[in-house]
Every structure is written in C-alpha cells, then in structure tokens.
Amino acid sequence: MPTVIQVARLKERIRDIADFPKKGIVFKDITTLIKDAECLKLVCDLFAEEAAKFDVDVVIGVESRGFIFAPIVASCLGVGFVPVRKKGKLPHKIVSVSYNLEYGKDSLEVHKDAISKGDRVLVIDDVLATGGTSSAVARLVEKLGGKVEAFGFLIDLTFLKGRAKLKKYPVFSLIQY
Ligand code: AMP
Image (cartoon, rainbow, N blue to C red):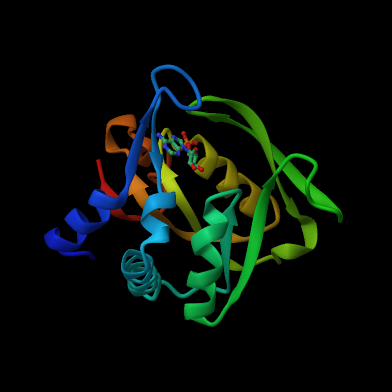
C-alpha cells in the first residue's frame, strides 16, 4: 500500500474538474498524474505490488481509463490483458450487460472467447464511484464462467459507497477520497 507521503504526492497531481461531464460531478482528471513520469512509475509499481497478492490468469481493463493501467499490471503479473468495451466497439462475438454510471446508463461488452470457464480475473479501473460499472464487469466475467479474484482501483470515491456493491469480492485502491 502507498505511504501517506506517496498518497499526498499522487493527490497533488490529480486535478479536480467541477461540473464535468455533468453539473454536480467533480471529475477526477488523472491526465495530469500520468503525464508526470515519477507519478506514473509510482502508480504502476503500487498497482503491481497490490496485484501480486492475487493469483490470476488474466487482467481486465475497463474502457477507457482502465486501459491505461490494466495492460501494465497484466504485463507485471506475466498474464494477458482483456479489454471490456462500451457497446458496439468489439469486432467478434460478444457477451453484453447493461449498467448504471454515476452519470448515465450504458452497456459493456467483452469478447466471448476472451474469458474461459474457470479463469481467475483481476479487474482494474481508474475510479470506483457508485460501483455500477464494476458490478457489471463481474456479471460479464461470471456469464462466461470466469471468477473475479479482485478489483483494483487507482481512486476510490468512498463517499459514493461503491464497495458496498462489490462486497462479494476483494477490493483494493491506491488513493481514497
Ligand atoms: P461507477 O460505475 O459509478 O463506479 O463509475 C466508475 C466509472 O466512471 C469509472 O470507469 C470512472 O472512469 C468513471 N467515473 C465515475 N465518476 C468519476 C469521477 N468523479 N471522476 C472520474 N471518473 C469517474
């Protein structure tokens, strides 16, 4: 887990954008964090350290900011990366679930042949907000006979209580608000 000093360093680089993409949402902009070479390295190292506690066959990243970290984590663990994408983006046979966002409603899809029965999966995303997206990803994995070993987030917006939706699963986050 990050030290208090490391968390403070990372939080300094996360930019709050008020009323984006909708009025009332404070958007956590991580582009400023990942542009900083030292912070990017620190986040990748911290993610890898936490992820190594789980024995997994595959790492899922959730479109779109999950794609920034999940392939790095997969590579550190020596396993493959599977993208979960928004509706209509994947070219082959898919399974789909609908889900609620903090700001809207959408569908998530994964290739049918990307997860095999019995696969142990780590799911990585940038922000845990209401937990709607992550619980939809769990349903996708489980539809294909996979097992979610854990969820890992850069940021947990704890006041939105997303963890309550994921209480069946181990959850780790590097930074909490
Ligand atoms: P939720 O389904 O409510 O847990 O929302 C999680 C997804 O929405 C993540 O993929 C985030 O990228 C995005 N998200 C939700 N709220 C925020 C926020 N305040 N700042 C940045 N991203 C957010």
